[in-house]
Length: 177
Ligand SMILES: CC(C)(COP(=O)(O)OP(=O)(O)OC[C@H]1O[C@@H](n2cnc3c(N)ncnc32)[C@H](O)[C@@H]1OP(=O)(O)O)[C@@H](O)C(=O)NCCC(=O)NCCS
View 1: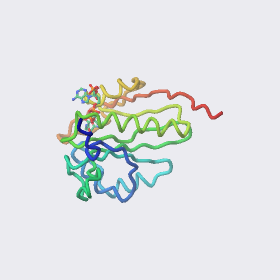
View 2 (view 1 turned 45 degrees about the vertical axis):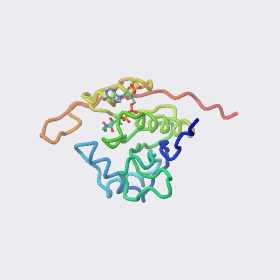
View 3 (view 1 turned 30 degrees about the vertical axis):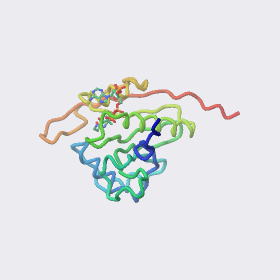
View 4 (view 1 turned 90 degrees about the horizontal axis):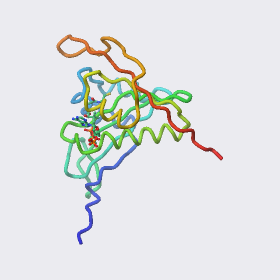
C-alpha cells in the first residue's frame, strides 16, 4: 500500500501582514473591485480582524515563495473576517481560479467558523452578490440564510450594479465550564 503524499495535503494557515502581496494576487483574480496590498494591510490591522489561508503542496504554485523541501507552500486561497463583540463578519473569501472546486473554499469557511466560535461569536454574517451561485451554494450548505438585501451594492467592471444578499448563521454557545 502506498502512503498518501502529505506534501499535497491542503493546509489551513494563519495569514498576516507579510502575506498581503500573495492575498492581493488571488483577490484580483476573484473580484472586480480588487483589494491591493495597501488596502489589505489596513484591513488586517483593524481591531478583531483575522485572516486564514489555504496552502497547497507543489501541485499549484501561485505564491511568491517556491515550495521548500516538499513543505506545502503555495497560497491557494484566503478568508478574511472581523470579530466585534459576539459577531463576526466574513469580509472576503477567495480561491485562486486554478484551485477551485477542490473543497478549499469550504475548508477555509469552516476554519473561519471554528475560529469565530472559539472566541464566543454567536452571529456570523456576510454579504454576497445575488448572482454568485458558487458562493451562495457554499454559504447555504453551511447553514447561512438570507436576512437582507442591499440594492446595487457591488459595482461591476462594465459599470452595472449587482445587489448584495446579507446572510447570517447563529453559532452554538461555547460551553466554558
Ligand atoms: C466561492 C468560492 C470561494 C468557492 O471556493 P471553492 O474552493 O471553489 O469551493 P469548494 O470546492 O470548497 O466547494 C464547496 C461548495 O461550494 C459550492 N460550490 C463551489 N463551486 C460551485 C459552483 N461552481 N457551482 C455551484 N456550487 C458550487 C458547492 O456547494 C460545494 O460543495 P460540493 O463540492 O460538496 O458540491 C470560489 O468560487 C471563489 O473564490 N470565487 C470567487 C470569489 C468569490 O466569489 N468569493 C465569495 C465572495 S462572497
